[in-house]
Amino acid sequence: MPTVAKAIFKQCKAQRASNAGGLASDAFLNEPLSCKPDLQALVCEDGEDCFTQAEVDALAKMYDGVCNPQAAERIYYGWPVGSENAIKVESKPGWVLYIGPISATFISPCG
Image (cartoon, rainbow, N blue to C red; front, side, top):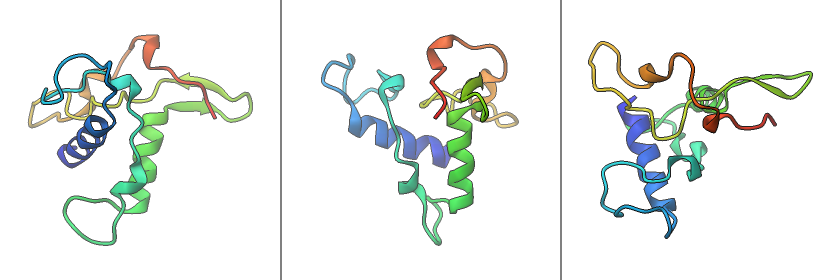
């Protein structure tokens, strides 16, 4: 998850809106819900800081959450952008804090 967290953080900081609050140098995202990462930018054939297309497709599904394809309704929320390194515990890195109920703020429409 550290590679994903670093890449998403870099993209989100580059998208930072002028009204985001805080400082551009902050080590966290001031407006994580406004970030729309380009996951395809993480794809490459070989290298340490990139991913295969299958891995990026899996990330996209994690961010999107679960939808009922017949009714186009959100069944379960996706993982919030900026939360990839939410906890710093070696045995449980990354999205550990979000396994359970979360604010409806993170729920986006299916589609």
